[in-house]
Length: 436
Image (cartoon, rainbow, N blue to C red; front, top):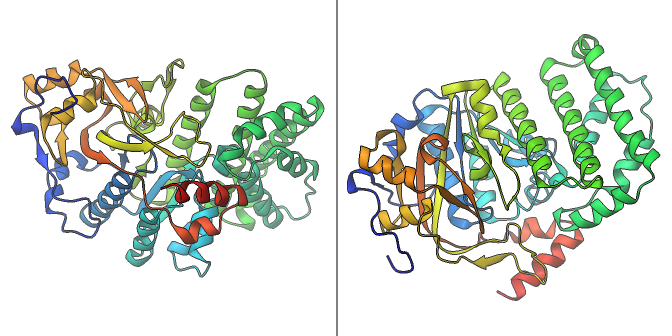
């Protein structure tokens, strides 16, 4: 294989060729996954980097397979939990404008692509399958979506209780309209007077205690699911606040990952209170069964490890590897209207290089069914690409199956969703699309 120095890949017996990424095509080429999925209640759908067309099409195709072949009745993605309630309402037959929901109900740019629109439209057509975000909300740069969800619930469950308006005022002061303003949000928070920061944290803590102590009263006035979702939103607002506090003290990416991944696991657990089986789509670094050190940070406990701790064999992660092409600028400055950059050839001893050397096209591997020689080859590939970085990985422990995407390209911008986005996002995409 040109550009790679891996001498050989896995044996032909390990390869399950896949015919297409088309979400609407027959699913016969995925029959081998029946053994992988089994009776698992949670299947993790990984991606090597966000916002790639091939990864999003694969996500849609695998979701359809899980729903149609295995009765999965919930889909959850790496996007804001509180934000995503409006999208679930639409999936269940709501009348809101989908453009606005893709822009505002799916966070961190995740909804601004026609491939995501296709998945959401399919969920509505399919009926009976719920949609959720599992992340903190507000693109992880604002506590407002989660806080507003909790306050809206309180207005119904505890109408006589007067929430201190300073809580929302302070959250608004540093909340960013999109991930593009992360640096500005962190600076604004750090410049807030200490007493203002402390007031927000104390206020959120008091609300948390009130929710806990008055749970039975609240449930009587509303419902158990409504209470659980509101309390989950409040917990996420508190988590965003904690991340900003830690950042102001000089904390780094590790504390963010610890907080986010534990919170995402809590949300998956909540979803399974009401649903039988859930497909969880997120970055490989989140869904892998283990710990990960990203971009020279200390190792963090990831979502997948939390799910194994809570659900054991009921959690099955399916990761991806990638070949050549262009991918999202994870960890790179994405100014001047650029979002995607060319991938350099993979390191010869990494998992992606091994998979590239195995087969020329799109294919999958059942990691549980490998020969001794193939197992040794996988174990020898001790790193995996995550965007433009690498993480140490024991793939046999981290995943139950792998899908190799040989070529990566940018996802397709969704004009309607972008037009419904905040001004800074519209301007950013205008700069990118004009230069394509």
